[in-house]
Figure (tube, helix red, strand yellow):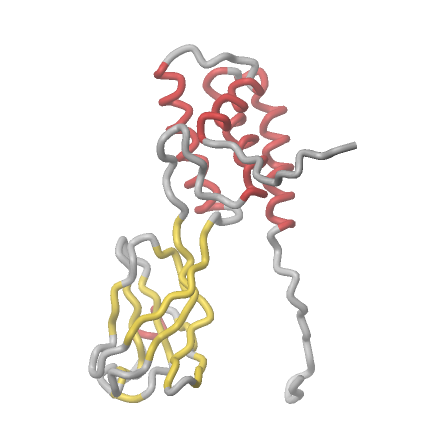
Length: 219
């Protein structure tokens, strides 16, 4: 039997909203229904990013360092950073992430040298602070920036999420909408959403090998 030969199936925002309404046993009847569902969809995406399995993108980012400048402003969509290195003459050296308390206790923040520690300050527009202060303008800071996904846009546009997250998003929106338009279905829809969310978190878990060795041994 012949197959379709395609692997491009996805749902745009309007498809997700329509599917969620159908699961609530309701029909979209007005422009307000669509507007209300879009608002709930944006709230759902925020809730998942804030509380459960964050829906973020990891972007390899480079920041040119400037001699004597220890602080650099990042894009406002940045949630966090990881795997930070300093690249000098093609060689990467690890930089340790530290918290606010540790950064505050560093003695002389104006000391210059090759940076070995970095503090990510979570502001509306995030800032990174390096210690020690860069000693030249030829080194490059490289890290993975975890950035927020985009808001829900036009209804005929796809969401800024991985394809394996769509079932979970549909289930979550169904539950969110049911609270307002089909409370008799909320319990069942919440159960389905929780199951889909758990499955998504498990699918997205790292499959990298973990080695735990006694202190003093190197593998």
